[in-house]
Image (cartoon, rainbow, N blue to C red; front, side):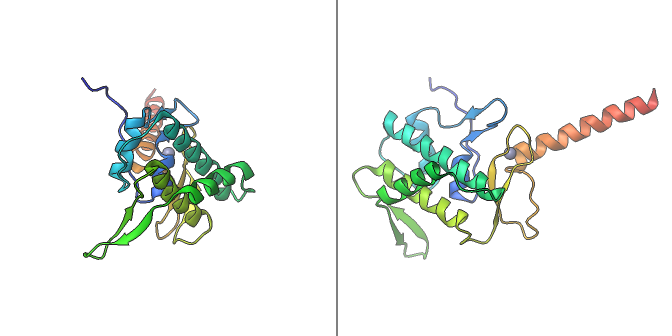
Amino acid sequence: MRAEFPDFRLGKVLATSFTGTLSERHGDAVERIPTPQRLVDWLVVNGLAVGSCTAAQLDLARELRESIHAVATAAAIQDALPASAVQVINDCSARGRAAAVLTPEGQRRWRLSSASRVEDALGVIAADAISIVAGERDGKLALCASPTCQAAFFDTSQSRTRKWCDMNTCGNRQKKARFNANQRKNLRAVD
Ligand SMILES: [Zn+2]
């Protein structure tokens, strides 16, 4: 029987979807890529299908993930970018050998080289993070308002006032907490 793993939280932005594979960093952390196979699964869902993944490649992926998280967090609060994390992102970007290819339908796909394919996929993710932090894309880095989450996410809303990394999880939880607090207040008012 296959073990049950936490679901992926899929966003529209590759780099921050990737950092979202670890959630609740300031609470009970949820690791969504606990095994090399789960990283393979995540990459497939995100258009970066790889043949296999080793434990060392998973470690590298997690190192990249936490580096993107650190850099994106610093960028969101306009702090200096942590040098070692920048180095990890740059190394991953330089090591990747993926090529962007255009399909006959006019869509971009990533073609990974046959060797060291996880590294190619990580290179694509690292380059995506670079383009966001460098302000090349339409949107703004922000931190999730949930105190147990504080994930860096890329706000592409028109007003740039998105508060949560994910409406279905953090947003909902916050709404429920507010609702419960109001209920308690109302009950007290009755007393
Ligand atoms: Zn969140």
